Length: 573
Image (cartoon, rainbow, N blue to C red; front, top):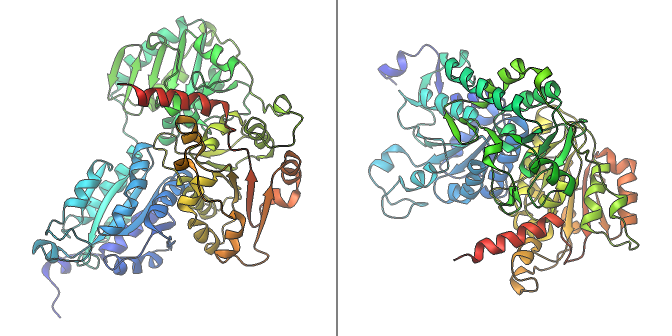
């Protein structure tokens, strides 16, 4: 069979799918999530070939959540779905990754370019010959959408998409037609790694902004640092810690910023979320005459219902694409370069660094005479249970708000979805995070806290956790339904109720073998204490599933405040 001229001119011919998956491997991805479908099957054959693992999830939505959780630990995640039905099942998870600045590569196997050109009436289509409709849907939630239709352009398209996924820390969307999977392209490019260096600032602009920042910082009498999610997502936590070490300023985090700062550092004061903060934190931050906010996302749930009592006149905002000093905006100036120079140039002899409050796990302060587990008591107690370098996943609802009262050990990674808030996210994210730590060769515990209502949405991912031999500690908080919704509206409404499950029995139902897991049913503080002190439980040498009961009408203090604010916002006319 004659070789076409284009292929014969290649120095190192390689199939398109092999090139794509090799690039993912080079960046650090080791496992690919997704669900097989006839339009992606041939592409999936290449995953093992390049040293990647195919996960194989129970559905595409869970796969998307898992790829998100994987990315938050490993740096980037990947998911493969099939055209139409598969990708649309995953689109909620991809929207969440876009919203929360998480780098996930979404690869969609599509019908052949010939089928698309001819508008064939194929399965998984809308029956109208439009093969662009699903790509169009994904454009608003992807920083790059690329159709890998032309072998002459494919390699450059792949490299550009993966580069932007990394640099912008958001999803990209690639379609791979069935007749392109095995097309030959130039493999020589693989010898040159994709340039993942972050763009540098224009030096004149950067220096000017640094001077402006230093002017206000040195003039302030009571400055503080407030660290948020995008400090993590856009990889400036090293600069944040260097800033803390250099200046000795009090540092606080937002709910989405949990895990960005070493919470055992003597300058750490706790979580600031407006009215949802502890009183000493609220007083200290709101009394400050200059707040350095790093990577802020000032959403409703991240601010306890927009309850900040601070002024932009007393704020400098550091972002990945711009800096805001009071009311002056400096577009195109990245926070990384500015932070580094502020650290380098700040004159400590002129800096006022007044110590702030110290956070602790307030267990004794929240004890009462009853042995019933309460939200106020449990979350500080969790802080005593956690170990250095744990990965902690909290579900939208009581867990997301309760964890504010947990002081983390050093090196803790926190995973939550405060902005997008898709219930059930945490179960898939737990699988992805646990797999990512194993892929990284790290001995870290993965600990999930999820409510009973949320767990029911994505419970099947427990099956994937078992199949992969992962060993997370899973706490299902049983409180009879959708608690956060109850506090927003409908405390006793039937639509906030759920069918009670025998949650711990799902572990053997999903095929876990005797001796490879352990389940617990916990209803009292004493049982929590015994569990947290148990050496085997702490060792996390196998999957552990805890069914824990908390009263239906109990909720973290911050959740109640935020729910009230949310209800008021919803009722505005």
